[in-house]
Length: 472
Image 1 (cartoon, rainbow, N blue to C red):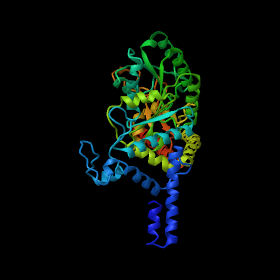
Image 2 (image 1 turned 120 degrees about the horizontal axis):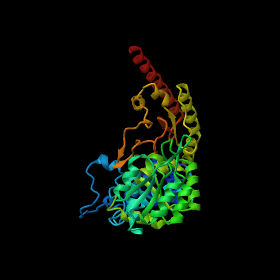
Image 3 (image 1 turned 180 degrees about the vertical axis):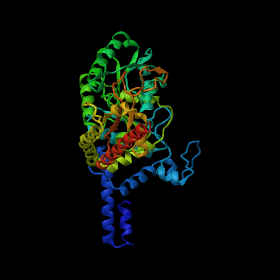
Image 4 (image 1 turned 60 degrees about the vertical axis):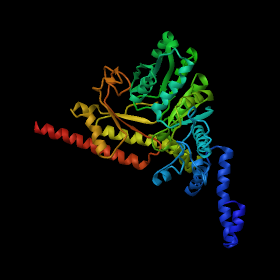
């Protein structure tokens, strides 16, 4: 309602009451005006009424919601189900155009505005978390693995004769498949083990570049991973990429929530070459799975990715992100990051106590700021199946942990041979282990419940061993 509307309303309702209502409305309009002006996270999160009002205003800018609009085309954002319409706030046109996912749609000014605002807010959130040097963000409606494939396809024109991509070994199928899906040969550089930690083999990467740099499209480094693997030595990789003029893509899937990971990326960016950094939306911003955020110093790299995407795309991830970031605000976002950092040593300490109680130990992985692991060697030596131990946790409603057996039988993944097993990020890791992660959104109650259930699993495992020993 505008000022004229309120003046007319005062002839129907007590003027003092309408003045108060008008003030409330003006407060909300001020928040929206400030959002357009600053294009950053609001300092304090918005209430739900303001967010819904804003989304309704945005939706009214799309042609399918115009009063009296007649759609005479094949794609007119017609939505049959009211449930679906409500879930999408009547935004049905999606984002982008057939030639560019970031292009403005003539029929959907509201949806286009939503997409641009989302990218402004998520860029600000990433800068608040520590990646200060990036210039632009691109939100794509695919998860991290497929986002990597889009990047590789977009970069093809920059080095059309390249046939290989170097990957510092990370034992997750999507990382390998993202390379293969783009039509490149993954050159997997095995890591090395220093004490308990699995770290980057910089010498092997350097050797490959010495002789094959002209055939390499890019190097993919990883900054968030399961322990005992550490984030890659990104500074030295960035230096190598600059020396050999090779593109550097960073898989930072859930690394935005780690201040230390962001410090390393910033350092690498200042000392060498970091071209595109990829983040997951669900792991970092607590929205449903389905999106990724690409950030870069060079805007033209992101434009290449936007232009390689075929056709329009769903706006759902943009809606989810925009609503979440508006409701969080900068203060809550900073608090969530702080809480995670403070909880990490708590989980590590309690996790280690349980391990020690049953003859195991916490693996020393000092460079991993999110994930941690304990050995399962003693349990395995007694004849207990460590893979089954993971199932025991799952049946107690503990999700997200990962068990890797020393003698892993999985030796062929995505057509590539891993003679000594797949899962530990290296050849012949000397321990069987269980991982856990202190990720954004975890609470102290989660730590307590997890450690109690882990304790129960160890107790049951040793009871089972005693029972079978007595039977024999």
